[in-house]
Length: 141
Image (cartoon, rainbow, N blue to C red; front, side, top):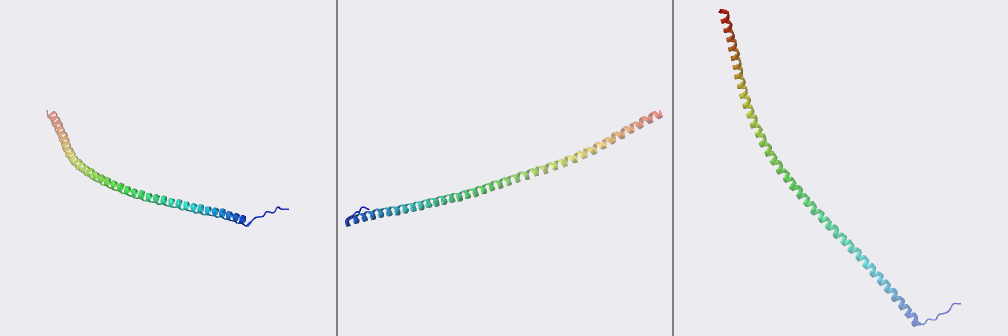
Protein backbone atom coordinates (compact mmCIF):
# COMPACT_ATOMS: atom_id res chain seq x y z
CA UNK A 1 0.00 0.00 0.00
CA UNK A 2 0.99 3.46 -0.67
CA UNK A 3 1.55 5.79 2.15
CA UNK A 4 -0.90 8.57 2.19
CA UNK A 5 0.27 12.06 2.58
CA UNK A 6 -2.14 14.60 3.85
CA UNK A 7 -1.59 18.06 2.68
CA UNK A 8 -3.40 20.97 4.05
CA UNK A 9 -4.71 23.87 2.09
CA UNK A 10 -2.00 26.21 3.30
CA UNK A 11 0.72 23.74 2.37
CA UNK A 12 -0.74 23.30 -1.11
CA UNK A 13 -1.05 27.04 -1.44
CA UNK A 14 2.56 27.62 -0.35
CA UNK A 15 3.75 24.79 -2.64
CA UNK A 16 1.84 26.27 -5.63
CA UNK A 17 3.08 29.75 -4.80
CA UNK A 18 6.67 28.51 -4.54
CA UNK A 19 6.27 26.60 -7.83
CA UNK A 20 4.86 29.64 -9.63
CA UNK A 21 7.57 31.91 -8.20
CA UNK A 22 10.31 29.53 -9.34
CA UNK A 23 8.66 29.05 -12.73
CA UNK A 24 8.12 32.79 -13.12
CA UNK A 25 11.73 33.51 -12.14
CA UNK A 26 12.98 30.85 -14.58
CA UNK A 27 10.84 32.24 -17.44
CA UNK A 28 11.89 35.79 -16.55
CA UNK A 29 15.58 34.77 -16.65
CA UNK A 30 15.10 32.95 -19.96
CA UNK A 31 13.36 36.00 -21.42
CA UNK A 32 16.18 38.37 -20.37
CA UNK A 33 18.87 35.95 -21.55
CA UNK A 34 17.17 35.73 -24.95
CA UNK A 35 16.80 39.50 -25.00
CA UNK A 36 20.51 39.95 -24.13
CA UNK A 37 21.57 37.41 -26.77
CA UNK A 38 19.42 39.24 -29.33
CA UNK A 39 21.00 42.58 -28.38
CA UNK A 40 24.49 41.11 -28.54
CA UNK A 41 23.76 39.77 -32.02
CA UNK A 42 22.41 43.16 -33.06
CA UNK A 43 25.52 44.85 -31.63
CA UNK A 44 27.76 42.40 -33.51
CA UNK A 45 25.81 43.10 -36.68
CA UNK A 46 26.16 46.85 -36.14
CA UNK A 47 29.85 46.43 -35.42
CA UNK A 48 30.29 44.41 -38.60
CA UNK A 49 28.34 46.98 -40.60
CA UNK A 50 30.52 49.78 -39.20
CA UNK A 51 33.64 47.82 -40.11
CA UNK A 52 32.32 47.15 -43.62
CA UNK A 53 31.53 50.84 -44.04
CA UNK A 54 35.03 51.81 -42.84
CA UNK A 55 36.63 49.31 -45.20
CA UNK A 56 34.53 50.62 -48.09
CA UNK A 57 35.52 54.20 -47.25
CA UNK A 58 39.18 53.23 -47.07
CA UNK A 59 38.93 51.44 -50.41
CA UNK A 60 37.29 54.50 -51.91
CA UNK A 61 40.05 56.72 -50.50
CA UNK A 62 42.71 54.33 -51.86
CA UNK A 63 41.05 54.38 -55.26
CA UNK A 64 41.10 58.19 -55.26
CA UNK A 65 44.77 58.16 -54.26
CA UNK A 66 45.54 55.72 -57.07
CA UNK A 67 43.72 57.92 -59.56
CA UNK A 68 45.71 60.94 -58.34
CA UNK A 69 48.97 58.99 -58.63
CA UNK A 70 48.09 57.84 -62.13
CA UNK A 71 47.32 61.42 -63.12
CA UNK A 72 50.65 62.57 -61.63
CA UNK A 73 52.51 59.85 -63.53
CA UNK A 74 50.72 60.79 -66.74
CA UNK A 75 51.69 64.45 -66.23
CA UNK A 76 55.31 63.45 -65.58
CA UNK A 77 55.42 61.23 -68.66
CA UNK A 78 53.90 63.96 -70.80
CA UNK A 79 56.47 66.49 -69.53
CA UNK A 80 59.24 63.97 -70.15
CA UNK A 81 57.90 63.29 -73.65
CA UNK A 82 57.82 67.03 -74.45
CA UNK A 83 61.38 67.44 -73.17
CA UNK A 84 62.58 64.46 -75.20
CA UNK A 85 60.83 65.82 -78.29
CA UNK A 86 62.64 69.17 -77.84
CA UNK A 87 65.98 67.41 -77.47
CA UNK A 88 65.39 65.26 -80.54
CA UNK A 89 64.42 68.34 -82.56
CA UNK A 90 67.59 70.09 -81.41
CA UNK A 91 69.69 67.05 -82.37
CA UNK A 92 67.93 66.87 -85.72
CA UNK A 93 68.85 70.52 -86.37
CA UNK A 94 72.47 69.75 -85.43
CA UNK A 95 72.52 66.81 -87.83
CA UNK A 96 71.08 69.00 -90.58
CA UNK A 97 73.82 71.59 -89.92
CA UNK A 98 76.43 68.82 -90.03
CA UNK A 99 74.96 67.58 -93.33
CA UNK A 100 75.35 71.07 -94.77
CA UNK A 101 78.96 71.18 -93.58
CA UNK A 102 79.65 67.78 -95.12
CA UNK A 103 78.09 68.93 -98.39
CA UNK A 104 80.32 72.02 -98.36
CA UNK A 105 83.37 69.87 -97.62
CA UNK A 106 82.38 67.50 -100.40
CA UNK A 107 82.22 70.42 -102.84
CA UNK A 108 85.70 71.56 -101.72
CA UNK A 109 87.06 68.04 -102.20
CA UNK A 110 85.52 67.90 -105.68
CA UNK A 111 87.14 71.25 -106.52
CA UNK A 112 90.48 69.99 -105.16
CA UNK A 113 90.10 66.78 -107.13
CA UNK A 114 89.52 68.79 -110.30
CA UNK A 115 92.66 70.86 -109.58
CA UNK A 116 94.71 67.72 -108.91
CA UNK A 117 93.40 66.16 -112.13
CA UNK A 118 94.36 69.33 -114.02
CA UNK A 119 97.81 69.40 -112.39
CA UNK A 120 98.29 65.70 -113.09
CA UNK A 121 97.41 66.22 -116.74
CA UNK A 122 99.62 69.32 -116.90
CA UNK A 123 102.56 67.45 -115.37
CA UNK A 124 101.97 64.46 -117.67
CA UNK A 125 101.74 66.84 -120.64
CA UNK A 126 104.95 68.60 -119.48
CA UNK A 127 106.81 65.28 -119.20
CA UNK A 128 105.50 64.23 -122.58
CA UNK A 129 106.63 67.56 -124.06
CA UNK A 130 110.04 67.26 -122.40
CA UNK A 131 110.39 63.69 -123.62
CA UNK A 132 109.47 64.83 -127.11
CA UNK A 133 111.99 67.69 -126.95
CA UNK A 134 114.75 65.39 -125.69
CA UNK A 135 113.96 62.88 -128.40
CA UNK A 136 113.96 65.59 -131.06
CA UNK A 137 117.33 67.00 -129.81
CA UNK A 138 118.88 63.53 -129.90
CA UNK A 139 117.43 62.84 -133.30
CA UNK A 140 118.68 66.12 -134.84
CA UNK A 141 121.96 66.32 -133.15
